[in-house]
Amino acid sequence: MKFTFVFLISFFIFKCESTPKDRVIKESDLSSENHNENDVHNKEYDHEAFLGKEDARRFEELTPEESKKRLGELYNKVDTDNDGFVTTEELKQWIKFTQNKYIWNDAKEQMKQNDLNKDDFVTFDEYKKGTYGFADEGNIAHYKDMIARDERRFKLADTDNDGRLSREQFASFLHPESDDNMKPLVVQETLEDIDKNKDGSISLDEYIGDLWPEEDRVAGNEPEWVKSEREQFTNYRDINKDGKMDKEEVAAWILPPDYDHITSEAQHLISEADTDDDGKLTKSEVVEKYDLFVGSQATDFGEALKYKHDEM
Image (cartoon, rainbow, N blue to C red; front, side):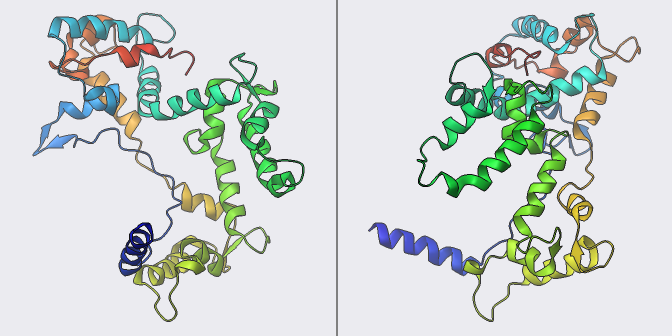
């Protein structure tokens, strides 16, 4: 029965043809909602952007009065310098925090496994033991390249060069695509992954080989998307037309310029709630516009309030 199930899955995948591996790093949507519906502003978008998708689903519990009270408590976490005002930059950082909560949760869970001495930091030796501790002296050499790559990433995430990672730094180590400081390394790692002949660049064959591995190929049957990717490489990826992609061209491919949804949303929330037009928000302005931030259906803020924003 197990064999039959696996066979049917394989057959279905074969019939549907393989699809290309997507290495392009895209900014996640701030909300599953459309920001505008039939030219009418949709506040549900703002709720998910401000609170995160998970907490936004819990909006059915509180009265408007309780909602205002808890929004006031949440304001204190958004106002990171405690000066009584929330700026665009503080609001951007908060939205980024709520949108990336899955990253912080992952870092928190993996810290438990790798922080062996329980000092709230992870050293590379701890990470190496926690990740590769299963390997004995006989096969540890098999993981030599992976360990070296992890160590290079670890050192870049260790921004204060103290030989250990805080939870925030560990999150950057685990999810380098989410940290601007780490993105050049993501480009380097991508180049190294695809550059099979190790000449420091990616040829057309290497590019296609990464998107369409040998094990997915059927003789004489090249999918249309592969033909399209060949054209993409020739016409757009290989910017200087030398037949290969260098590091700068790989960066242009996997890190394309994108619309800054976070900045746009932060500016929108401030423009809607800033009644005195000073470019920043007081607690009273935010609470007064609670329907913009959390709606008349209030959420259980318990999850959001668990996090110390100054730590993450």
